[in-house]
Length: 398
Image 1 (cartoon, helix red, strand yellow):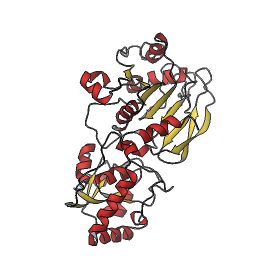
Image 2 (cartoon, one colour):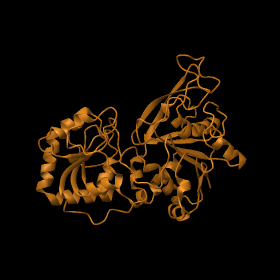
Image 3 (tube, rainbow, N blue to C red):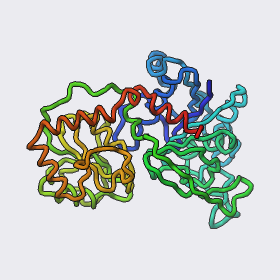
Image 4 (cartoon, rainbow, N blue to C red):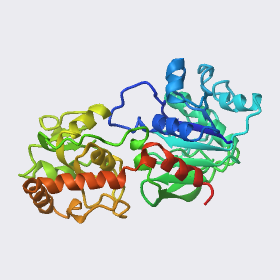
């Protein structure tokens, strides 16, 4: 049996909500639900904000039948003194485990957007070291208690899960608890600059944190059933599900789709702020995740552009699950973790058009390929969580 701390740093975990297709909000609750089901002897402690206490007893029994998830935040004090590191809210997680004599074996941390400074009243400003850096209220509420506990317990291994290359522990210089492993969707490394301790802040230390491709894009599949009753009659030829991202992906979308005479009537769903999208009727705005699935179950083809050059995202598995044939931008999955036929990796816009033209003329080949991709990439162990659970559980053994 293991005692495991779990949180999404910088954001609340929502168990009762409809998820948008922005920000990966569905991933933390689905991962915790799956881990708790597949590891009945473990106890999972929610150490970040969530709506867990709003769940009914029936909700909890349905989501967590093993009764092995505990909400540490349920009776957390309210934010009072914003500058006192020792205030009750900031020390709540520390006090909770100490008062109950609970030893945590390791923590699983997912990342949202986090400020450069998370600890109030103790971190020196870079330009004026005699002054302390200020911390915004959102960080104080959603991040400070978790980081306080992490920094005070450096002996507890930390598993960092990275589903978005923008959000890593590199965001904050005052998080000096470094991850034991970083599981992600690309083999890479990021530069972590950090203070050595509260008493030794200058100069900043720095190290490269290696991140490893670990199939984390498959979190989408958790707690789902294998897709049934494949819809052969699809009314929409081509749809794009894509947020703008930072840096903007507009120029890539423009080259491959918006100015592509074969695809320039396609609808684009996602969050966009680029000025050229304001009066472009093809941009339809954000929709909920399940609505995305419904729309793509009626679509034949889509095109995927990574959030960062080389990265694998969850989009390919979402589209395969919906029975929609995904074509990859040349910078998507540059490390070739995803074994798909070369026809799905067009090198030019012309290649993309020719591939779609072929499948339009050979519908049986499109349907056959989609079914082959579903059989190949959607395994029972992906759906019931055993695969992800083993990857996470074994990551500290390496």
